[in-house]
Image 1 (cartoon, each protein chain N blue to C red):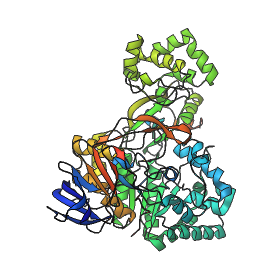
Image 2 (tube, each protein chain N blue to C red; image 1 turned 90 degrees about the vertical axis):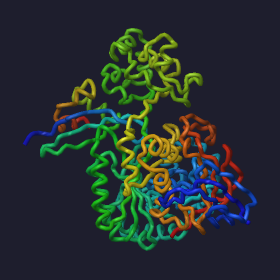
Image 3 (cartoon, one colour; image 1 turned 90 degrees about the horizontal axis):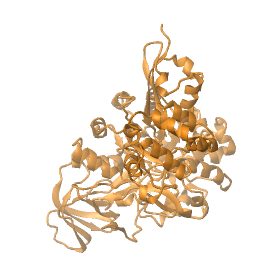
Image 4 (cartoon, one colour; image 1 turned 120 degrees about the vertical axis):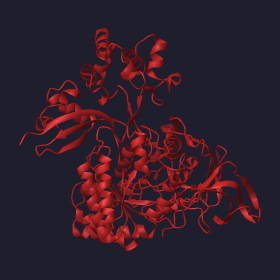
Length: 69
Length: 555
């Protein structure tokens, strides 16, 4: 079983008009899901895992990324 | 003789049947007759030649609870043809509310509605604690019809006090909540709203989020005594959790024989399977006999930001993120530093940000200079002899960073995808949030946009179908008695509009909230006349003094 990885990280408009980070994740069981993160959370995880930009999240371990939350 | 006779209009009755040229006769607030060449004459005759005559529109997801205390027309909703509104969504209503809990609730309302503090201190007197007394406080001055929800959070607050935001309820407290909800329903509440998402001004979960399922189940048992609605805000940012909520709603609907609705449901390119999966589960549960209505808004969502707060708009620009995450004073110093600014501009690319930033629009409100409002950054930059990225920095510095920019259509914006979703018989058009998010974006004009974008432009819905989706369908879903159709004996809530022009105006800031507070609004386009319970409430671009709005009777 492979580990969960980030397949994509895109910016979209959230319900309240703020930009949100939409992260597409392929989980260990092969299921692909989407998680929306607000700005504070998104910047925190980017900083935590040393991602210079949202694009740098692609290919990373989802569980490593989550450590920044 | 009729009180008002509407002649020669293209009558769309709201039931989905084909439009016909006809007259509509109104007397004593009701529709008395519909037919060709009505003979009895009218004290007032309105010539609707070339125009559509339809039932008044119904907005099922609003937060006008506070505004109704000084503005019974819920402006500008009424001028868009909205004749009935449902406030009290998302677990928050203004009643029942003990005097000692007002401050707590104000914080929650300010978080959602973005009303200025003066709205709660200067604009009205708190004359109520019970739901029936709140009803009395608004009832005499209404120009729109209101079917108010009662909020789960305030019911918890009444029964549990501060503990409502700390723990699950005991059995005796749940019983007390049931009694209180029953009182509210007896006083005319259209149902109960709850939220699994919302937070207060301190980012703490609102009281409804501390409820265990047994509590919601017990409250739905009371809704079942009346056959009334449960509205929820699900975890809409996650499809799987939303689907789990749909299953939960379906069980509650079947067990207690109640209608339920969840809002909002969004579509965007980044999660294209969200709505299809959501609707597939709705279809399955509907086939089981459950009544679960997903609400979808018509309007796209715009991204709005200023350099006062770090926005994910810059998430792909590491140097910008680094600067924008600095404390404000350091951020301003860094932006003023020529070398830093040069690097930021260089990092957006060789085009100076034309592609990424050129189409940003300067928003009104805040400190934005009037002559720049509504113009694109690319246009302003060209005028200043700068590239867009440089103009973004200099304009922000010139205005203490308090100048907001808008990236239009950042989500829920694919007309080709959303049109068929709105036309889906399982989808409830709503989720406008009217009266909320005041300083972030305009929540008015979604009905005009339905006609301009999804009837005229894309043809996803016929004119008759679009009218049905915002008149008879919501009236039936919510159990609004004798509304939502042009039918003899029904309330004379009527909109006369030009089908070739009806639309929403551009978003603009106004300062008409108590204490001069700002909000964004959109004017109506193509709406000629609006009648509420047989009286003209808005005509030819102006409000009248009619105050014939009612608390909606329920089926």
